[in-house]
Image (cartoon, rainbow, N blue to C red; front, side, top):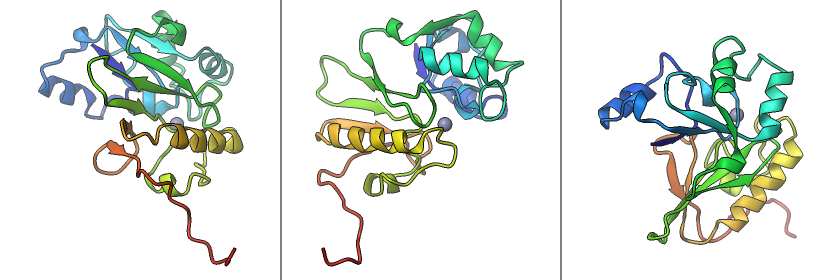
Length: 193
Ligand SMILES: [Zn+2]
């Protein structure tokens, strides 16, 4: 079994939710990470058989700048380092969509099944709220390069507004899954032209 992103870690519900679906930590072979902010990697180490795939720049950035909003340098970084791989080792059916800006190696992940028309784009933190469908210039306070993040957000929203891509946003309220409005929404403006 493959997991994408891991939440805040102990105290959260991930292992309980997996158990409710009959999944034990030993069933997880592979963890793919959109980026290494601490609220996406907290359960690293909880899966005894898993390898961790991370963008190379992302990994090097947090090794050089440990702490802060990054992975816990005592508990999480070493757990990933022991079983580290990079995104050139993604299995069939998962494709990296590089979207740096929120962090240096932030990557969205496109999940496809050859027998299914629909596909899922796991957004990571490219968007934090559905309001950014209409307001892609809204930035998140921890973006390391807000302009680069905005550019990738706009590009991804245009590229995947195709009627067959479900977007998965871990920070969306309510359900994580949603489809893009078919028509590009333009922000209201008070200027006549
Ligand atoms: Zn983040």
